[in-house]
Length: 212
Length: 212
Image (cartoon, rainbow over all chains, first blue to last red):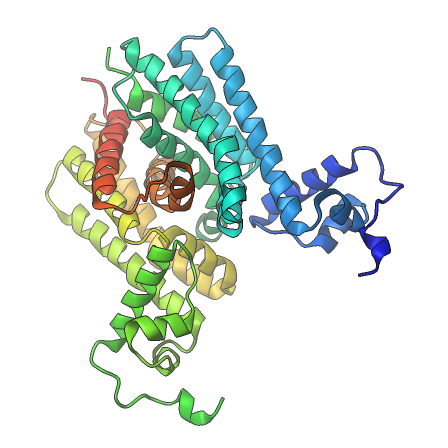
């Protein structure tokens, strides 16, 4: 378009960037999709869609920034957990609840990650892997191995455990569409989130703890 | 196009329909995608792409037929399992292995299901739910409740368990793209399948069995 639309929007309200990301997140969560229309984003946020160009370059840049926002939150939270002086069982139990809460808040996240890895060039895909997946890999290593060393956990492979836990937590909320048709249920309610959090925590702790 | 392209292909080789489905399945499995190009399908199967129109109407019809093929296989296999005179523990242990094998063979299946539920009209979405999801719902009810009644299993909600198990099994193979970038590993090897099957079976059985 004209050069003017690619320039700084001088009257961008404070927090406009964060508001665009929050609105994009809400649209994908509610619609159970991994895409957004810029016109809907503009309408719902009340912000000019030229701001997307200004802050993110284009829609792909916006999606990348959303992935960064969400994944950085997870990595920081896991780092914070590992820094705490908690025993391995308390730590893991707490973490499982957080994973369920994360997929409740951002049920699109795993699909967004897959989409961006697929659509990115090698360098960007590697950046995503190095920034988010490798740190989580290391965190799970510690999360599980500490418990194994102390004789609390069965000798479970930390990486396979990662898939078991995140797959179980993710599936519940990403199967929303099917549940709606099959059982006339919306999984994105706080009540079901709490029930699934309790189920996952009990189930997975029972799976990893040694019998006493 | 012309009427001729919509008519029966009189020299369709025997088994051409099944071969088209098998080739579409292989393309989606290898490419880690939930879509196919008709020209690639024709090239790889050695069959005229007019046969897609003849058997399935269009690409959407082909995808629907593939979902039917794969989901019917699962429902039949679960029905067969429930008909066996096995104790609940043996039955569930066997089933977990089968779920892992299913997602190894058809890693696109859950995403295909979600796509077709999303893109179908209400009637077709309801048909999918009634034909495949409701029977699995009933099967899980029996699979779990028999074990709970006999005092072998903890009192786990069968439907939440369904998400825990299928999510855990699915995630490993559908995260293939990320694993490739992050750890230079392809999850679609028989060796990793066997390792993940053993992990899932042990882990999930430990999660559900009462301590003895």
